Image (cartoon, rainbow, N blue to C red):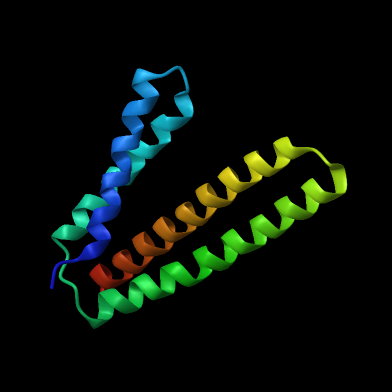
Length: 112
């Protein structure tokens, strides 16, 4: 079975927009090229468990940041908080997922 997590690397192509346009925020999408390495990782039960362990806290972290964003936007009536908060939610949940995956892989390599 092909490891579908590697397809997240295609999001890295959006980083080219940071070069073409004046918006340098797109350059952060180049970080998604890291996911291409998962095409070479064997998809087994342990890998699936590691993905689940990484995705669960990332999902709930994203929900909490979105909750705070929407609450702040509703209380202040400032829509710029909504745009920045949703981008922050996406960034934080992605970072939590990547960090948890790296920690899981490190533990697996170490034999813990």
